[in-house]
Length: 111
Length: 111
Image (cartoon, rainbow over all chains, first blue to last red; front, side):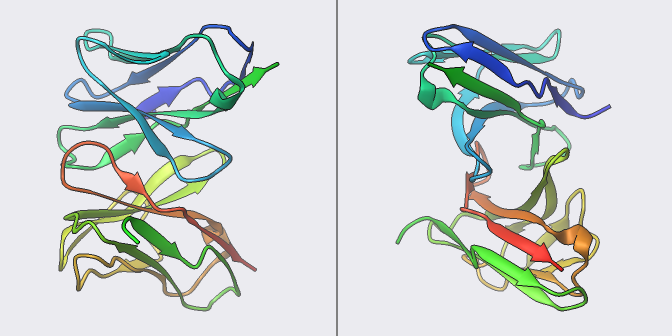
């Protein structure tokens, strides 16, 4: 079983739609959680950190459920520019500062 | 310029040749990382370094060598390149907490 699992998609949605991605992680002692965005095999870029209380950044909302070991990302009012691959990332308690990446979920927003 | 830079951006090399990928950061971040990204595998950690002269293996270190004589540089060497090492290589750095900042990547083809 992979340490961080994501549905690879693609998720095809129309502009203006709301879309949600989930990610599950296997190590219950995981400490930090992030969502990264990656465009066309360019470098991944930090989208947002994920906090236990949930956090929002504009149209993006991230949630963490430690009991069920999953992380979610909600995108409201999707834009064409949101088309990208979204990577779920965790740090493991016994891995120091190393990030472990999920395989990514591809989002295609269509006009 | 401030940031993290990788060179070269593209490289084609022959099987059996030695090739070095360069990574340079200007923030004096203590941690630096090398990942490779392949279709179907996502981002996998090759080596990382917690400080100058301190390096450690990641998930897929075989066939690679790293060094960190200066905080700002973290070169990755393929001692005898193989076709299976054809990939996109990303370097990243951070202060020891939080997310990473990635370089733009090196696209390596081994023929």
